[in-house]
Image (cartoon, rainbow, N blue to C red; front, side, top):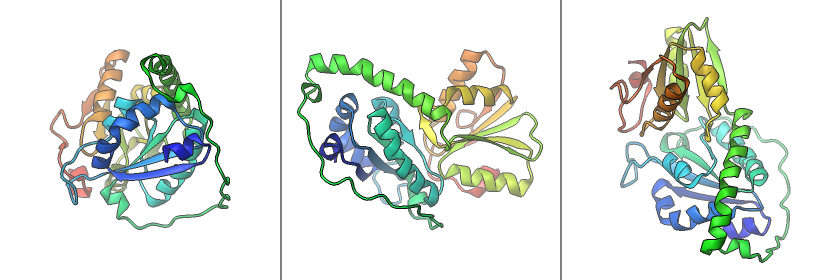
Length: 270
């Protein structure tokens, strides 16, 4: 798939979370090299270990490798993120991660298709010394990788997948969430008729820093709802510190949510 992408063709790679462990040697270096045709790498995490040997959170891989990442909440959004993911990948000339979870992968939902584009036909591979990551090439490519992530953050700021949703008459309570957890949050908020702001993050790496800071400035209390590791929670703690904001943050570190297993409506409502 990487070879096809480097030849100018669009490529899709699908694997479970532990599959990315096996692919990580090539994956880490691939980000240095970059790509030509859009390359979307689907990584399916498995909270609760329904069919896996661990509950690892592959959002860490995005941070570790400096890979742009999208997280869908519904089947329709998964389709749209895949479609636009190819465009993002080509604009950044970098492979991107599309992180799903078991609950989304086994969900059913309406998916609306637009006009389906025809295949680009044959690709052409152009040899280049920049594709061979010897130490000298790797040193030259690393700064380019960091510049790519700066461009990715600008895309994240205007991404249609990142949005602030005002429910009712919001006061000073905010909820930050992503992926399938957003569905639980939205249903609980509607059922309980809460007045709240929701920051729904679909492009979660890099985070839209300016949007997040705007959200922080509108809140006195923030609840972070995310399955598995406290990744968003820790990132928001850092932003609160940098901004010098006295905002109460509730999440896994405060004992309100667990790092274990899947969430559901009851867990989020409680």
